[in-house]
Length: 87
Image (tube, rainbow, N blue to C red; front, side, top):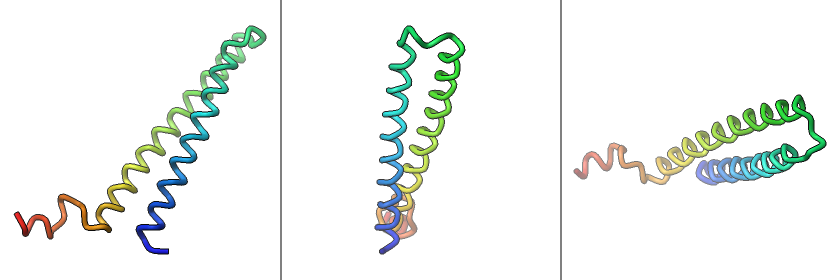
């Protein structure tokens, strides 16, 4: 497996994790609307949602970093030395 393939696999894995987190958040939001859920449970659910949202944004930042590394390996980095020599 090449470096680019490894990075792409990591990107895909993180995207799948974000989708899983989004699904969990949606389920929790549905639970918030359940009349059987008391105020304490709602507070706990909201806290869990906040944690998951933070995890999701962390994964998005990781994906952005991996995309930059992938572009760099592919020679598409606009800040690369080769591009500077051409300008």
